[in-house]
Length: 461
Image (cartoon, rainbow, N blue to C red; front, side, top):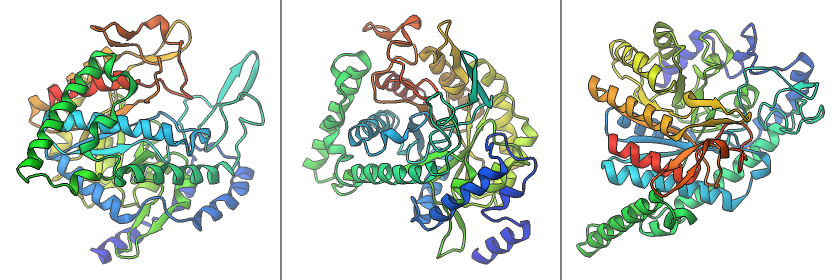
């Protein structure tokens, strides 16, 4: 296999830097020639830094995704829309976000009986794709904010300019975040016997929180019974794997952290376990596809209603020419109505084209983004749940496996999405979205809204 892989990569002429020769360059990497030159020092420095993740971890994740693709597991990806350099090393924030991920996974595991792969949008989600290159405020026009790896959210010429040293800061922050999450995952915090310690402040105040408390009590009773009869595997229940994902957008950073596995000779993007292509970067002839086609990490592809079915098949073939199970995850994001029309066609095409079809994952947040009359981007919890229901209904009708859920969320008590716990009165009205609107880019579900979604998904799996 090592020889086959090496011959194959050499034959197609791939290298970690071959994306640079793709013309025309992507508008999502808007670097002028002098900025590329200025960037090379940071790229060279990053090449000397240790990897954030390792090949064996990526392979283990790919194997678990392969199981989920055939109905033997479920992939849960959740986290912030965009990480901020100012948040790096904030142990309390990272703990609370990770605790919410554990809660969501517990709901899905208990209600479905399936092992849940827990993967955070963390330790690398510092770049954001943008539709418009410039932003205007009060007559002043400046480059748009593209994530903390590129520039700053502050609206002035100095902060909106590209700063290559940010790449090094992003790496340092990502290392800190990854180390903190790994410590929680392996140091006892993720111990299922401590699940009551995962409760957030709202658990006693909302219907979704109360439902979680009742579920955790049932799980606790089950664990006590298992311990009493000697059936509790105390070691395995105290630890969990920690996986990190982000959109593979700023390719100079990805190239700099690409490494060759000493055992197999395969290339891995060691900036994260799981990298995905977005709506603006899945061009078959674009630099992002060129980079991702040569790495061995599991790869995600965001799929909207705009995708051409034949082109998607060709893209999957290009990224996974050896039809390796678990290599590709298709993440649909188009809203309930458009999903009804498009998803059956996509499922049929994948089943016909591949022996090992990709994992199907639902991203119900991005396709339901609207702008309120007050100028804030927001999302409806009801619309999000509608897309989830359609996603699972279609897969059930077609006999395929709905294997994952992808959410933008935060443990903070934000009001960026509207709707919520209607029965308890704990909800965000449409006109109240601006009250606690803290996101740097896209609106996120708050913790109780995320729990509601998890309970709703569990009913459909």
